[in-house]
Length: 208
Ligand SMILES: [Zn+2]
Image: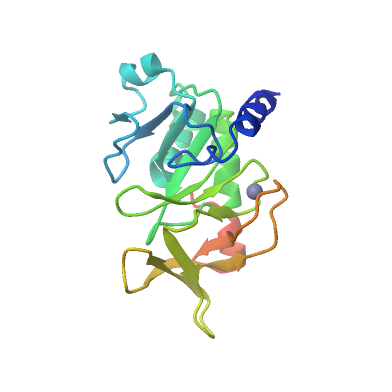
């Protein structure tokens, strides 16, 4: 099982996993970004999945905006495109004003790419704000960068970056869970996210 070795690696590096930008992986994880809305300083960016440099880089994780990954999934399943390879998984990038991933879309990515899916919620400059762990039970909120909350009577989650004084609507509904995660990590998580305006039934169905 692929996860065992990196879990051991994580355990050997207390306090270093998941920081500062990697999600559940150790710091030395090779993350390749494809078509992100930001310019990461800590990892290379590729313009497309067919870029030969991407395969040459041999990424552990491929991270790309959710719609970009879904397009790739469709192209692999129905268009005969080759799936890129990554050792640890694929990270759909979501954020404020961007659609939440639906269960059916997760299935599509799994069927097409055969890699575990770890969603990452990133800020406007690409900063990691919340990330999905190996228990796949919501997104762990990175402490000290942003606050997520729901105003009284509101279904939509709002976000306030630590450096900002005002909060913004995220375009997502869901809840902030404070119970410890099945992975053993503590701290709040974003759970049950779905795009505002979607009914729970629509959230389950993929429009891909
Ligand atoms: Zn967890």
